[in-house]
Image 1 (cartoon, rainbow, N blue to C red):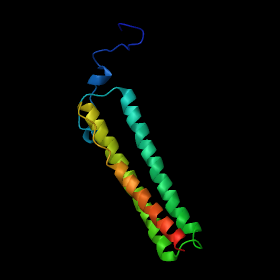
Image 2: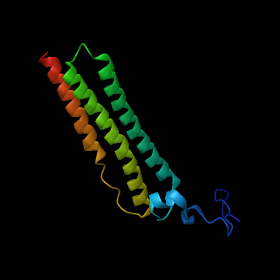
Image 3: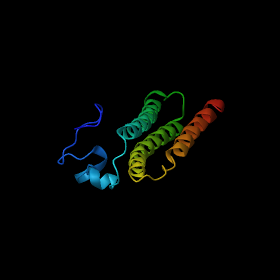
Image 4: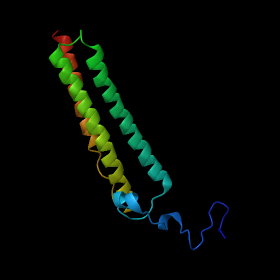
Length: 140
């Protein structure tokens, strides 16, 4: 029987959550360790989704630039800028997945969280795109 009304009962067949063993793909991806508090896992997932939203914004910007800015920018600049935005979107989406896995593994092993290398990529991509747009608009 549980010690308090908020603690679930556990039988010998269902171990507590922190002792449960993952199997299959999740065991290979997460690489073992102790199951972290669900709140931390869900916070990690929310951060992942925020990075994905950012990647989608860069994707939408690249598509919109190519589709609707034909009379604002020369074709070479427009295509280069749209390509840059799409590439940054791709890097952020892939990086978000890698970051989610790395953080999940670190939490399971009680290790320090890895540095967010995505932040400088995002800042560089945004600065580069903005710089090109400003340059074209100023010298047009």
